[in-house]
Image 1 (cartoon, rainbow, N blue to C red):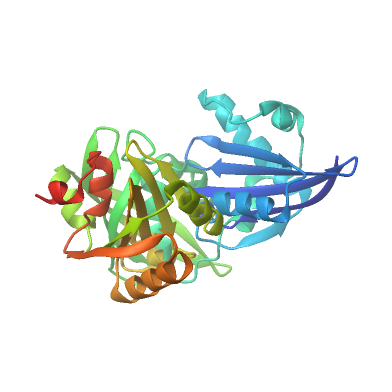
Image 2 (cartoon, rainbow, N blue to C red; image 1 turned 90 degrees about the vertical axis):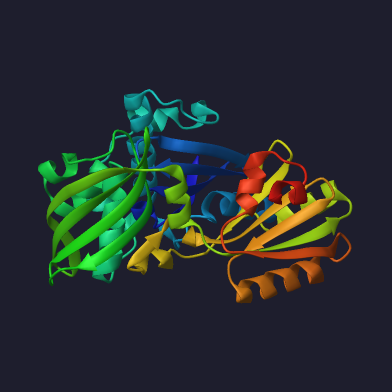
Length: 360
């Protein structure tokens, strides 16, 4: 096959990256799509398309990359193959099943050789961090996720990269960054581990080398368990919910997802759930980071109803006006609600088929 191009999201600091490669073979266009997970899973998803239309190729790329919140850049074939080899070997090392038709890429994992190293590739697949608070949030995220590769790259220290507080690849739910001095910052972190929720404090001593932030040292203290309801209170936010009556459900869902391939689509027991993420990760720049602040809106089809959840008056007006304009043959306004906390996702997870009963 003749290599045409490869592109990747600069989202390594968030943990996952989307990689697209296009080849040409005997007048056929071959597209390969990889989801690469830096938190221990390796290659998490794989799809290939042969001679897709430009719309089909674009939709698959948006499905893979649209929720990662970072720019896509073109990379050389050597970089793309190095990443497939590197992350694929994580699957083999940790006994994780490789996704999709493995025959299409297994040879790269087992036989590809390169002079590249992760230290050379890491700046290509990571965004440039410009301020201290953003850097501390990312490093807290990487620490909670037990992402040894990232910690090693940003510290140059095996000791720091092997330091951990979680039993598994944990998830940072909320973080407050406090500046103590020019080089010392404290993270007050709320996170999820395999056996529950916890808080802890992490002290980072950082510096700048050649215009890049580095970790000089870190210290973890004050680990405490947290109840589920306390976690909900910490990460919940006010929510607008608009409810529409829905006609021609199947036709609408097909058109809606075709128009919005970048949304995360989830088949639920009672209906179909969509998550629309922001197209950037600016929420990581805040001195109070909350995991769900990258969500712009959520949508839920249940029977002949369509629920829309938004988190600001501005987004609510814009999104609902767009829906009514674009899908007026399918949707008609029914009810509107405002809640001081998240409700729609809990309703989706509950499996209930009646919103009013759920609220009661």
